[in-house]
Image (cartoon, rainbow, N blue to C red; front, side, top):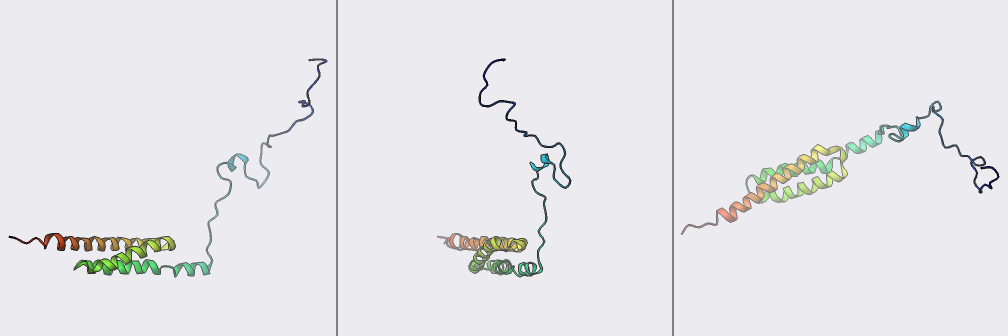
Length: 136
């Protein structure tokens, strides 16, 4: 349009190049790959002091397993194993939050504690429901 006045923004006056170069520079990640993997995965390497500290952090899990086994053994013969089984369940839940590397130990403590509680509840039901029935 010849002779027409232009506005304040002209295509010829102001150009921004928003394109990237087609090939990455040496040692640079491809631009398209940064959408899916912005960083490389690097495994964490534990120091010797961290390994010894983590190896010693299994006390709650072991206590949970011991209390669960003893509570289950006592619950086989009566309701008295309920206290130890309850302690095993509480210790297993605490160990789950603090001791990540001792997963199977606290899991067995939780299972044996729950089994002891089930047996103790069974004894309570037997004593209160079955043995209290008096024939006429």
